[in-house]
Structures are given as structure tokens and as C-alpha cells.
Image 1 (cartoon, rainbow, N blue to C red):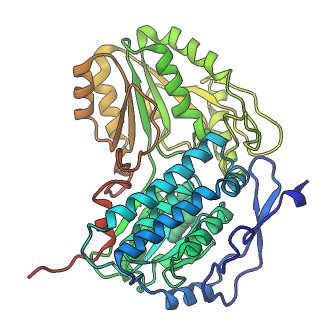
Image 2 (tube, rainbow, N blue to C red; image 1 turned 135 degrees about the vertical axis):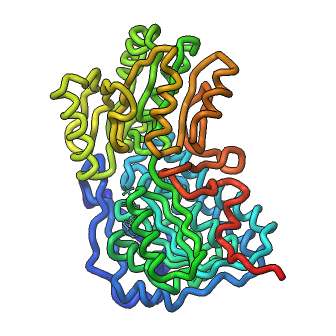
Image 3 (spheres, rainbow, N blue to C red; image 1 turned 180 degrees about the vertical axis):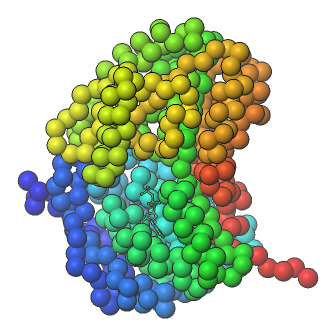
Length: 462
Ligand code: ADP
């Protein structure tokens, strides 16, 4: 029953999270996407709270060694709190156990990596950074942005996604508990169009770190242009329209496994997820049969059950948009396969839709929907040109056993992250930095060595 499941925003931290909170809006419910039950309540920041936070924000002046020590202490606290994090990641964000484990690891890696890297940075912090994060990695991206800004000595105003305020509250509470001063980290939960817009358009904000849609990044860029000093950084990680090519030399069992993980893990709600699969024509019948067989083995359901492979999508709006896309394909006779879906909750059944090529997708469908095209060997250059023509350039996968094909394809594609003979999934902090080109982001890559420099103020060297 809903009441018994409820978490309160301060259960785990007991810390005041909005520094100098003066008002706050009426509390609202955070909802479980798998059941519709209330997970807890959150008080969004009122305009007065944003004003108070802006006035209270002070760059973190402690020496870099101390900042690094505190961020490492926060990483320890994150690890100690896996239980509470899993409870919220499963209930508020619909994350499965394996997703929750890798998300926590990524968050911890970001904290430790930026803490270590910051010692090499000599430039001054930009000042006050707004960190605007999405719901799909409500712990890892939220924490990675904040860790980078704090490690370099900035003050942070963190605006988590509307859908996942409780995870953000737990994480921010642990950062404060580790020793980050309240004037250097303030959490401002609330709506993008109000709280997010207010923060990013304020001249007291010296830089913005954003992950979310390309459209929102453009809105933020315009808001900043109206107020901020030239050169104030916008670090944006945005969407993708990601493809994979499986040629006739690929190992089919491995390729099928990687296609399943890349398109259906996290219910397809990763910016790195595979959206359009190109299979070479001569192996296509056998390959798709194997793929449909492997799909049947996926367990759909509430991520609270540890056997779940694919959970719900985040909310009613996401569900409606994806469902409409799949229904159009069904009417047009292009829905090749669809699993059946549990009752209740925002579930979308993993689906495969036939397309001629990536241009048919039009936009990023952020859910467990794979688009399938076939190609002839001689058309490979055309396939690559079509992928480049989307304007996005986030991830790309290639399954082949032909060595010089790997080189040829990688050189021709304008994509930030390429995955060869493996699944097409996210970043490995420190060893495989993540980030896109074109409409997919501004760079530099998160989890890589150049990233931290963007959080500092460029100083004239006489
Ligand atoms: P998504 O499709 O992942 O929800 P959004 O770009 O809408 O992508 O959201 C990503 C983050 O940006 C969220 O925290 C959201 O609240 C915030 N956001 C949305 N609109 C704005 C805006 N106009 N200004 C600042 N932040 C915004």
C-alpha cells in the first residue's frame, strides 16, 4: 500500500537542503512509475528560494586537497548508502537492480575521478555554476556535474529533474554530510521552465552544466546570451539518434546480446541507447529470428522485483509519446515484434519497428523501441552518410570481423563514442569519456581529462 512505501525527502540525510529556505511551494508527490504510488513528497523551490540561494552562494574556497578529501568522503558515503539509493532508484526512477548498481558506481567514479584530477588544475573557478540534470541518470549525472564544479572550487546551484527530486535530495544530503559547505551546494528542486529558467538566466550565474534535450540546451544558450559575460561556459550533453551496423561477418550470438542490451536495457532511456539497427541483408532473416527469440527471454515488470530486466518508462507523458509512435507503426504494418506488457504503471513493451533507414525515425524515441533496417554491402557508404546526416553524433555500434572496415567506418562517422563488437552503453569514467558531436553536445567529454578546465575562468596570461 502506498502509505507504507513512502519515503520522506529527509529520511536519510536529516540535513537542511535548501540553504536559507524562505518559502517553498506546497509539497508535491514524487511518483513510482511502475505502480503510480507515491514514493515521497518534495517541496519545490519558490522564486524567493532561488533568490536566497543565489545571494548565499559562495565559491568553495577550501584548498584543492581538502575539496578532494571531502569529495572522496562523499563517495564513501554513497557506497555505504547503496540500500537507500537502490530503494529510491527503483521506486522513483524505475531502475532495475543492475542499472542501480552501475549508476551508483558511475556516481562514485565521478566523485573520485574529479577529486583526483582537480589537483592538476591551477586556474580559478568560474564562480557560481548552475547544474541542471535529467531524470534518466538521476544519481550519476546529477553527482558528476556537481563533483566537477565543486572539485574546481565553484559554488553549485543544483536543479534536479522534476521526476527525481528524492534521489537528488539523498545525494545532496550526503555531499553536505561529507563536508561540502552549504554555501557551495544548494539544491533547488522544481520545474525546468520556472526554477531552471530562473537560475540559468541570472547574471550571478557564471556557468551552466546541463544534460537533457537538445531543445532545452538551445533555450539555455539563449537565456545565457542575454545576461552572461561573453565566454561564460555552457557545457551541454544532449540527445542522440544512435545506430548500429551488423555486417555478415559478425558473430550473431554476441551481436544479438549486444543489440538487446543496447536497445532495451534501462527501458531504452539512455541517451547512448541504440535506436536504429542496420543488418546486412543476407544475414537478416536468421538474425532477426534470433533477436526475437532473445527478446522473449526479457522479464518486464516492477524493478522492485530483482528478476526484472526491463522496467517502466519514467512518466505518463513519456508513455503516451512512445505509445503513439509504436501505434503509428502498427497501423502502417511496420511493427515487427512486441512483447506483452504488465498492467498498471507506465510500461512500454519492448518493440521492433521496420524502417528503411535512420532518416525514417525523425526524432529520438526515448524508450524500449528498436528500429530495424537492412542494407546491401555495396550501400554501406550510403548508410554512413545517412547516419551523419541526422546531425546527431553521440554513439555508434559496429559488429564486424573485418579489421579495415572498423577503421573505414570510424573515420567516416562524426560520432563521439564508437563501440566495436560490444554493447553500446555509456561511459567508463576515466578510461572511456562520454560525449557527443553536433546536436548531441558541446563537449568536452564528461569523465575525461579536459572536462574540468571548462569549470574554470580563463585568465589572461601576460
Ligand atoms: P528530458 O527530455 O530529459 O526531460 P529536458 O531537457 O526537458 O529533457 O530536461 C532536462 C533538465 O532540464 C531537467 O532538469 C529540466 O527540468 C530542465 N529544464 C527544462 N526546461 C528548462 C529551461 N527552460 N531552463 C532550464 N532548465 C530546464
